Image (cartoon, rainbow, N blue to C red; front, side):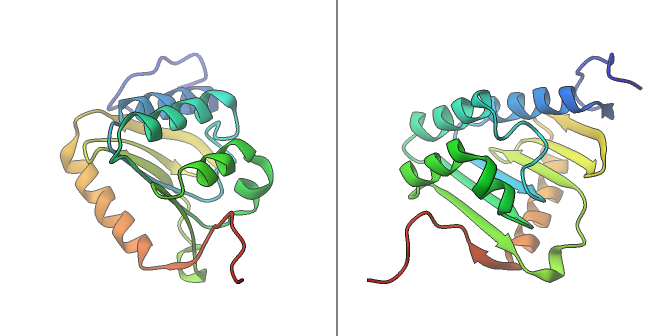
Length: 165
């Protein structure tokens, strides 16, 4: 498999460009909930305008929409994703960004779950191999359990407002 491969659901796909494209497709498919686990959001096109616009649309179209992001390291998010930080500022009531503790730093995959039925999963952070699917409730259930386990490792929250008086 190579970068000339086409984007087909339910298959192992290789390529950073295709990975970015599939992420955008999964985000577009969401109407009420997005769960994201990633090492730092460096891969996947999260710092670009298109991702920002998709996430802004997701957060603004439905009054009950929720975006939960769990990161192992928030440095890239805070320094290289100003648009996403702006979303956090604007939609802080519907968007949360968390940082894991040391016990979760061994996880080398990343995934996104949309509306408890669609997903994309990068097999390993160092390789542009991934799988995605729409309406795959069985796989999403497994990934949701994993996301719940990762929530138990949360050590800190990314906040755009200073604490204190």
